[in-house]
Image: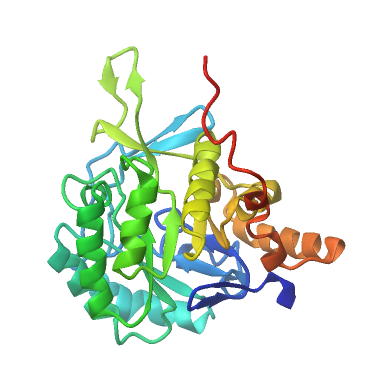
Length: 315
């Protein structure tokens, strides 16, 4: 693979900027018939908790125009089974693994990160402080800069690994949340998680998801996610960003890179095309060769333009 694809996010070096998003790629092992995991920049695991978690009752997913709503509720096998059953297989396949973690309390996060600390074959830890589909934890930490800072500082003290913090687009001020995470010790920011949405069956007048609301993802959120990446990159140029939100083709990748992301996470597109992440690596490699550029050349190109026009037009 071409060295032109290599990207660095603080202490985290990736062979290319194509990463799969947590909750959309299982533990990676489910996709080995479609993607060579060793060729991806990385994979983010399903959110790991201290103990196995069943998630929400079905129905938990429904389609929407240009996207989907999910309220899975962070179902996972727990950190111990991941360490003993999943991670060794991923390591043998040559995958670059980023462990996404969550908890109901700060102590839960610290305990999960502590359990992962000695694990071989783990590139980074990603704190999920932005899931809208759980009653406790998750987005409750991400919606308050003070809560974000407190949690990130505690986890930072508990790990020497690269620390990625996944932020919520539903936060009152995403730049303030991003600054709080950076100042508390985050090495990298993931932007953004899903937007809170709802779908109602007109025949029954009942929500289509058992949780009521769910996280909206897919192409519908891409313009919002690009704007948020652009704003945070402009406000905090010293913190590397993974861009997330509606990425399904090469133009989407290039758009997020231009906005200021150094890598991207592919999420909902995996449900439609399980091989999409591998295809994007090849397409980006061809693009870089054709235009004689590196990924580093592509990052932040839109930041050269003046800041006017970031607000919506007045109606």
